[in-house]
Length: 240
Image (cartoon, rainbow, N blue to C red; front, side, top):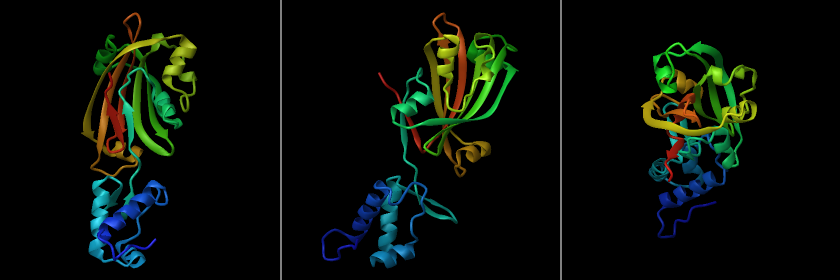
């Protein structure tokens, strides 16, 4: 497609619209490198100033991002999640027509430290199951989740495969445990080097931290989860 030079629409606006359309149609796919300024100048017969103005527009719209020393890339699509405490990550992705997967980073039985004990409303040293997972969907690493479970409520839970199955489904199907309410808090933070590596992001990078304790109908806590979400790719909104 050529740009029209005999129209009132500035060339940089035309180029912005053209590249935006290419991103929307996946002609320029997420994580794909944008052609260089020189290539765009030659391809569309425009100046570097025109190209830079178009790139600035797309950057402001969050459609592209520049990695120093590497180039400019199409950004990954932003995911928006409702703050529904009793819906699992697997169910949340499924509701969008996306398939959730997990990589188990670590799983063991440990003694609850003071923080975990406070979150689960149990005594320090209580036996808990600790499971850390990297949560993925459609090839994108979305979150790092570490869960602590009161072991006496779900004995031998580590025998179940957690790569494609949600903890909530295991609670319900294997232990007949029904979660009834939750306490949830969230805040923004900068990702640690380890989190950057797992989430494939460049530091400094913002992440969204979500802490949640879920409860059974009798008032006892079952699970405490600390989640680290991609800050620039994932939005959580409240609901009524």
